[in-house]
Structure formats: structure tokens, C-alpha cells
Image 1: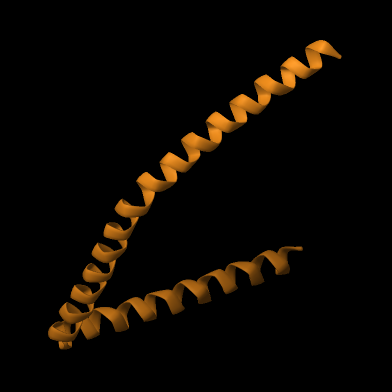
Image 2: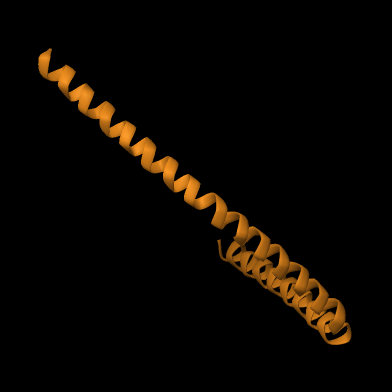
Length: 87
């Protein structure tokens, strides 16, 4: 069992080293090619802005639909209660 735990810890360390290697590569790229990184960040920012704008348009419509469905469910519950009362 001790060997299994040791192997698990070795695998975790390998994963950590791989992640750190990728982070170092990213940092090197950011330092060596700041214009490329800035361009990528600008694209990401524009994409997120677009997604936020879409969400701001969709969310109110969804909220209205939820309110409408909630009202319909409430009405159905009241109708069901009334039917059950007379049974």
C-alpha cells in the first residue's frame, strides 16, 4: 500500500511539473512577444464583451419567461387543489 501512495505522489509531482512548464512557456511568450499577447488579450476582452452584451439581452427575456411559467404553475396548482377538494 505504501508503494501505491508513493506512486500517486510521484504522479502528482509530475503533473505539477508539467503545469509549471506550461506556465513558464506562457510567461516566456508574454515577455518575448508582448504584442502578440496584447493582441490575444484584446481579442479575449472583445469576445467577453460580446458575450456579456448577449447575456444582457437574453437574461431579461428568460426572467420574464420564468415569471410567466411560475404563474402558470401556481394557477395549475390552485386548479388541482380545487379538483382534489371536490373529490
